[in-house]
Length: 167
Image (cartoon, rainbow, N blue to C red; front, side, top):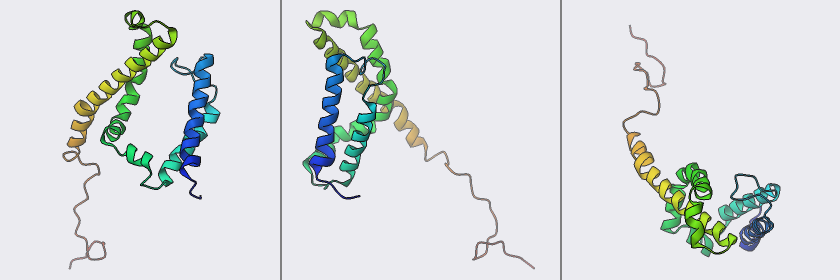
């Protein structure tokens, strides 16, 4: 496939995704942050695919790619799987159990939603980092002690790999 300019393969699809999500959020179409699927998933999925392809084929000196190679963002990429595993727990907790404690801190419903998003995001990052450092990293270090393949059988192999016949 041809290499498209960054504005076509990265910035334009990201802008379209932001507009689509903003429309759904603004009109309250029971989508994001409420354990349901967006109405626009058939539009968003190919746009995300185009962004990924654009990032993969882009010039490595593109300012956006230099930003994505920053240490904090690389670290978030490393802990992203445990964050994925825990994010819904924190979203539900912030919507149901923490809402009475968060409500007095804000004055509008929009601020309340944004505060719940921020709280659940921070809790997700913290739990992802804890799981990464306390579970995943120690397990990764165990790899050197646990063989990943079965041991090779001890046979007398000749130069061609076959068993040599003895007299």
